[in-house]
Amino acid sequence: MVKFKPAGDLALVISFGEVIDENVNRKVHAVAKAIERANPEWLIEVVPTYSTVYVYYDPLMVSYTKVAEAVKPFLSAEPDEEKSRIVEIPTVYGGEFGPDIEFVAQYNGLSVDDVIEIHSKPLYRVYMLGFTPGFAYLGGMDEKIATPRLEKPRLKVPAGSVGIAGKQTGIYPLESPGGWRLIGRTPLKLFDPRKDPPTLLQPGDYVKFVPISEEEFRELYRGGQGND
Image (tube, rainbow, N blue to C red; front, side):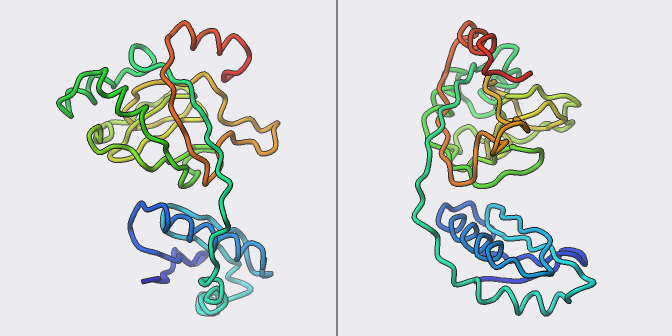
């Protein structure tokens, strides 16, 4: 059941439930794209998430009630046929690149090799981008390696770090603070403002983590593919 609710005095939230589900997420993006294409004059921004659409509007031009009425026709938007990319993400696991991988293994009663095998096996859907530019929230992680966040976030997480938070996994595109459990790192640059689009990953893409050695990581980094 679709629900509307306000988010402060600048946004309306269209909620399709509280789930991480591929079909729901495809519907979310279909509705968001339909609203963006219509581009009403009061619209500031549309932000799709896992299962909600945030519609930011100018409160000097329109009321919450009128926005709610205006977006109702877009709820019938159907997802386009996706031509999804599969993006391989070379990742070195453990050691200095994944300092929390042993905790993840111990917490779940597994070996480090088990964690690497389980994490690198699925295709992960990019459900949304957020937190920092290009940070991809990935769905499809096996619950066998689900692990709580750090009690105290790190002040600096290196760009390219691969982390786990609860049942989610993701990649830090930029150096930033963060509380996810770090299990590895990729040498690829996930955000480059000089490119169009500036983010390597887009919603609807699929990610495949490919384990590599430290030597391979350093070769790719030196080869100009890595973060500055």
